[in-house]
Length: 305
Image 1 (cartoon, rainbow, N blue to C red):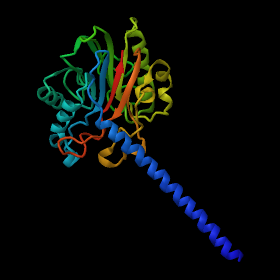
Image 2 (image 1 turned 90 degrees about the vertical axis):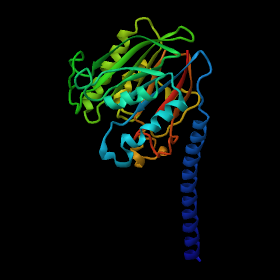
Image 3 (image 1 turned 30 degrees about the vertical axis):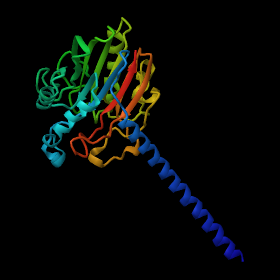
């Protein structure tokens, strides 16, 4: 009798555990599909007091990517831009030919930026693109995340030269001015990420004496709980965290190695000086019948002045 009871209790426990695991998986899938459905309803800003911004690690052109190499997905990037229609967006890892292609195929946008290796046209660009119909460029510049920020240089323990491109812009729809900063932190150097981000925080504070709204986009190569974000979190806010409608899906997909529900977030939109953040989205939509437009998903946010 005791043996029978023990087996029944063990079977009950296993059943409960199985139900809990299935429930957890179901909830994750529900969150994923809810975010996916909301993404498809993510329409362009119709309000003159709203600004749509995007951060997009475009993935450099690398023939080792095989079917995912840039020549096979570049049309998908243009289709994405035509669908999302961001007012301003920052790209990371863009090589000169990629910047040129986007400029040619999406003529509504102009861009600024320099190659990180020589300050002109060599190496990856951290370009800022803007919709010329609604946004006006006032001034811009680039600096290196290093001890010598005014010249092409490696910072601390960085594996690569890293830059930040900044721009002071004006929204033609309402006359409001704002700053936009775009960057890409090092993928290996812990000290380079920490000190590079601190340099960004200091420069953002110094450049914005007028108190204009500020947007910072980039691939930070760290998860949201990394200690290097502490000082930034004191000065600006993550759009993902404060948006009225948001998600917590992976921004890096690794060509399928990372699933959206893994919550592998390393790309960011930070803001300050805006009235509110109505929406934030990780854009997982497929374009031009390609499974991925990059090994990162574009992230998009609507900001209210």
